[in-house]
Length: 77
Image (cartoon, rainbow, N blue to C red; front, side, top):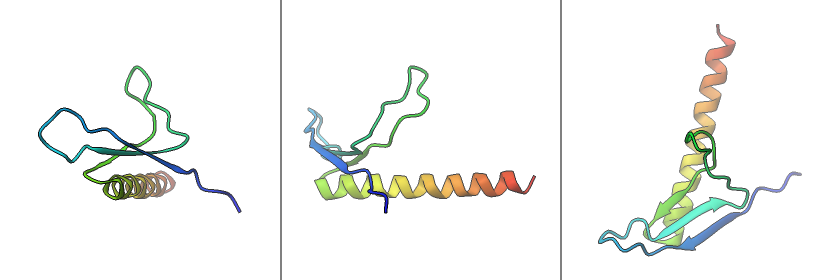
């Protein structure tokens, strides 16, 4: 069985009045987008560590669903 890529979190506390970006979460294998803004991993943000992880997992689910939709469209051409 393949091991899942672990989630890494951090406390940011940016100097802004809103707190929804205090925690960040990425996969351990996160790579930033290239200079054109293409590719790269996802970043989840939240007021708490749990919210940031949930945001990351939601984004991953959205990406999987979009990839499946794209494959379905391509196979129907």
